[in-house]
Length: 222
Image 1 (cartoon, one colour):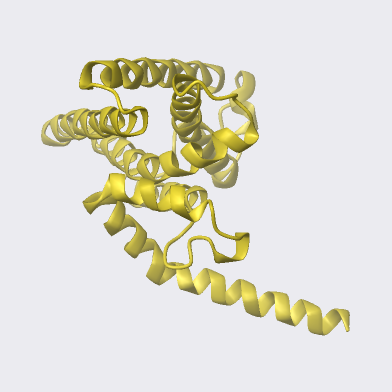
Image 2 (cartoon, one colour):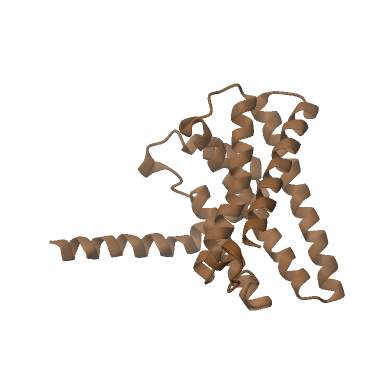
């Protein structure tokens, strides 16, 4: 009986993994073309039963994780192994292989959804708990994935050390920050029902807090 249960689990796992080949590009395209609409979609999906959520896309955290894996594959093909792997100084000694590096990057880029979601909950005057944080965190993961991909590609371009690639890498990262930050202002304005100035203030504060948290984490593993 246990053997057949194992086969059934493997069958479901194989189907789920292969379905990503369709639903990952669908999710990426929708997020790039209609980012705020995808965030609203995530909010609606949070109200469905667990087995009925995100049936035509990837769930936001999974989308972020797969994007980081794809970004790492691009890195390996363009510039080789990341400099963080194999260091023996401080906490960087924990990054011994690609799996641990991807986990670290997942934690790093998850800081943006976490901080931004917490800022929204506080700005709305709600009690900050696991339930109130979940919805905005999931919605923010949709935006964090393309931002992480653009950031990773920009870093790879800079590491190529060609004059053209360094310039392209800098401009791509600036574009990623502008894209991500401007959408945050629109998101706060939509959910707070406030003016552009107040929304920009909340978005800017959350972005600065996120970047400080990321810099601190990078310092620990640098």
